[in-house]
Length: 391
Image 1 (cartoon, rainbow, N blue to C red):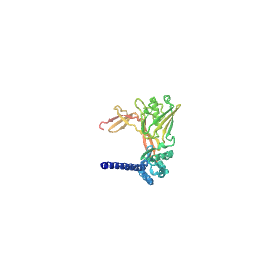
Image 2: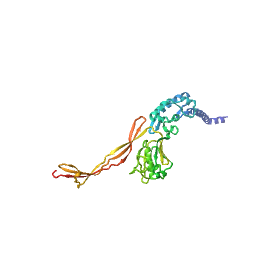
Image 3: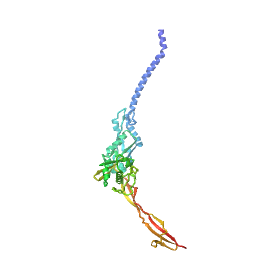
Image 4: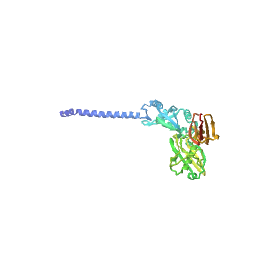
């Protein structure tokens, strides 16, 4: 008995340690379980918004979160270098709908209602024009905004043309028929030819038609038609060479000369983000050319203005010129003889002027390019000034 008491006394600390360890394990398990329950409740979210486990606070949490979000978020609509920032007050967070289908312990999407669709559309029309906005699939556009709001994306850009009704972005902006008078060009051209003009890029006829084995004459002809077709468009910064004399195939006002081996190219800039197409359809000797793409907000009008380039007069001394027929002045000091050997001819420059009319009816006018239609010829006059003795 005494031996047993001694053993218990010697191992008492061990038993106490075991008991404390067991109580600690039980306590930890209980705390972990309670924490896990609370953590799961706290993990109920709508996008990045944590709702916690008090469902009576869900509505106010969501409304406050959206108010903060709408003050920081930027939803921009863009089209043809115009932009509009959406006023997110047009959208209200549908808290009742969210709470009704809320799944606990998961990440949920938000739902929104359009509070003032008419005002939203009116604002779009003020920037992009009624004709453009009328071609919108309104439901598709508003749903796209609501989808971004549902996950609380802060910065979103909407390209308006993505929400047009079918095929509206492939509108025919201009179309012309040309007579192809050169048989060599007729024989080289395919029945149909489509040229793609990439958005925000510099177009090059040599690059665009690199896969075709067109002659310089055919490339020059096509370039001349593209220039003529696009004068009343948004394309800018035309750069090209003109031939010294008008070619026999010329069907337009201005001839463009393209030479592959000399890098005589025809280039211009597409300053819009949209792609555009030039389509050619050959029927016999008639070539139909069309500019196809997203319709314009602005309107473009071409005018041509002629400027006279006054010729210069060059005087050349001729001491043999003494025939009284050519005397132009005679006084006490000198006698002046002049003979016109080359009559002067005024030149002419034609300026191609584009007027852009914006949605608010303001206008901007600028020169696209100019071409010399008549070179001036200097007037050459032989002159002899005879100073009189004692004069």
